[in-house]
Length: 343
Image 1 (tube, rainbow, N blue to C red):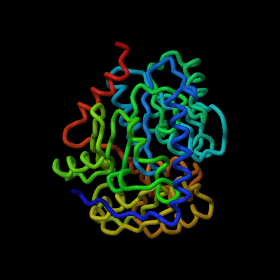
Image 2 (image 1 turned 60 degrees about the vertical axis):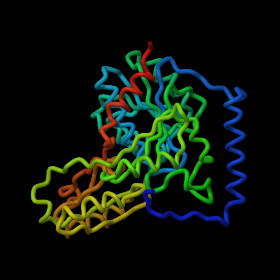
Image 3 (image 1 turned 180 degrees about the horizontal axis):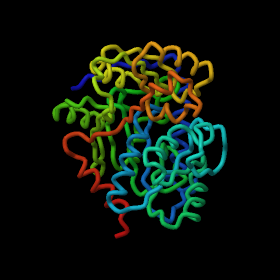
Image 4 (image 1 turned 90 degrees about the horizontal axis):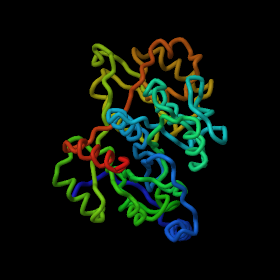
């Protein structure tokens, strides 16, 4: 059995978790029995989500899916709630949008495709889907980001992500652990993707995880690893690097860069951190002592256009992608394509 990283839970909070879990179970039963309505969109819908809060790699998976759909000749769009934004309602992400307006993750997706993929935000997914389809007739499929618990909109295929280092089978419901609902909620998934696996994960370890997850007969389990885009930096091994991040789990990126560089200094902010002028001044001061400054695409989307000189001149953006392990990417592609076909 693989031994993912240990993580903390808080058993003293179990009574609150029990109550929260019961509330979520009652809510799900209302959807299952039709007492809460589920609307159907005019196009096929793919949902990407998780049982836990944050950090499972939903945005890279959404980008991977969008690229697959484009390769298949589809015209997809992404709909997100726009977590962390300071606005409300339906918005179309564009070149003038900021993270304050639409959220950092939708903005990251928009820039990943240089605006070629329509990206929208709306906290009400039913309203969002209707409005975007009413004004974009060429869209023929829709990716819902972080929508596993947002059940008011029907999905044709449900992707559930779980972090290798914090499998939902070993976690607890909030606030004792990090789960939004009990682990048996995984039964609603069509596909389970174990994310952020080590690239050298063995087939035996993968089988042990599958045994632990206990998928149903109709569910398929896949494994993915983080894939870092190579930065166009010569002689990185001779460079002193400043890495700053505001993502849920920066450690894998730190571990990736450390052996590649002469020296890595890290400044870690909370996930979705809004960079203040004071933060930028501190980063600029640290940048003066570094040869290269690196941040993630998600963090870059939250930076202002007017960066201090030293920071701006040395800054490089590290894109984070997804690699499907065991040569199963074609199989995953086929399952998704079949689910959204009109046949």
